Amino acid sequence: MNLTAALAERIVNSQPDTVARDAARQGVRDFLAVSWPVLQGQVPDSGLPALRGVYGDGSARSHALLLGYASHALDYDDFHADFRGHPSVVILPALFAWQQLQPSELDQFLDAYAIGVEVAGRLGLAVSQQHYALGNHNTATLGTVAAAAALARLLALDVSATATLLGIATTQASGLRAQFGSAVKPLHAGFAAARAVTAAQLTLAGFDGKQDGVIEAFISATSNGQAQPEKLIDNWAQPWRIVTPGLEFKPFPTCAGTHSAAEATRILRNEWLASGKSLESLLESISEISVAFPPGGDIAASVRVPTNGIETRFSLEYVIAAMLIYGDLRLQDFAEGELNQEVMPLAAKVLRTPDENAPPDAINPALRFHLVTITLRDGSQLQHHRTRQQSLADAVDVAGKLRAALQQESPQRQQQLLSSSELANSAHLAQLTQLLG
Image 1 (cartoon, one colour):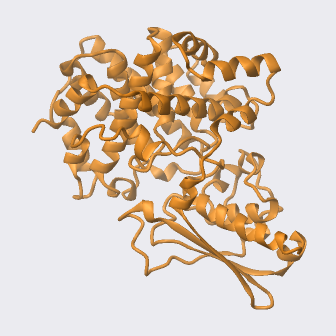
Image 2 (cartoon, helix red, strand yellow; image 1 turned 30 degrees about the vertical axis):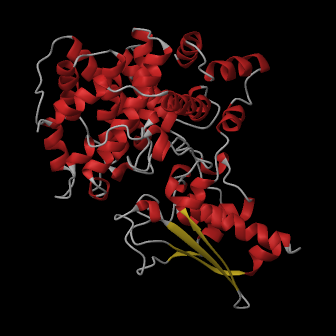
Image 3 (cartoon, helix red, strand yellow; image 1 turned 60 degrees about the vertical axis):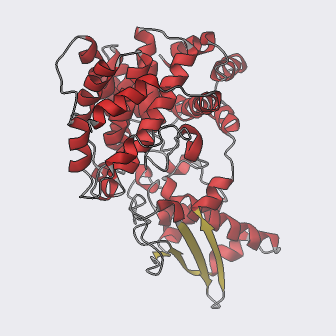
């Protein structure tokens, strides 16, 4: 079977439905919420000015790179379980960058986005959890191919040209988890979006590339012998992956691998306060905090002792301590710059205790959980078990998230952005493209 050709055929000929398009609208809204504060310089970020100095030529590739970086810089963007990465911060920057070159109609744009997410999720399944475990950053690697697929659909390429584009993109796909905790992690999203734009431009220019065997080679080479290539095309769009399992919108500006731990901690904090006791009495009484999870469940949240604000996003210890102190994960406590020293002493009391009786996280990340246990000086304990599925069941108010991101704008500007984000028509898409430019 020519897997690349089979994938290209599905990208070209399948048709997202209205449910998938509505999910795409919501994804765009969240994308705007997480990228706008960075693009407008409203949060500390030294990366974007530096990148603008290097990629300031105004090209579509540079625009895709800058948008990709900005939308992933806060680590507040959406996640997809099948993909095990952040699809929108790769796919949408490539699509918006191309919109400035060659405007398309709204339905074309939404369909291309849905197609990109479909490919992202399917690639994640095809390479297995081993791809991530081997040290690859799926957003960068698989995201390059997903964004390329979205552009192929947006450009209405035929099957042959789509296969060429996919091959050119796939051979560029790279990105290492070793960069987590630095500005290079969000730059991975920018690199991937820019690579997809480059692949599209080369394809349109008639550049020669293999139309078969490239995706197959990529899947085989990056999955440690556990590839399941058939998952790339079997039961395509049944249902659309932008709908099920769908885009997961973040309630906190931290690694998704910390969220159920944060929520378990907040529940314990609220229960303590509801009993009539003070927060100060809780914080003063804590002897130790343990957090249990399936073996390997902290592979993304790997930073035990953060040294800067960016690293705190990947630290279970810091997240749990910040939640106990403030009752929320505040953007300012996870922004670039120095650590919040009020949090660090309590974070030092957090111990990781993997539950060796639980199935390893690599087998099924959907079964991930966090068990947070607070041991007090008198020997008593507060404990709560929170699963990933329980976290996902609590819907995130994306519209509210966007309104919060726009608080520093004038009322007129807020209304303009909120209206455009509804994407009710192609005029809204044109307005949003201009605003993001």
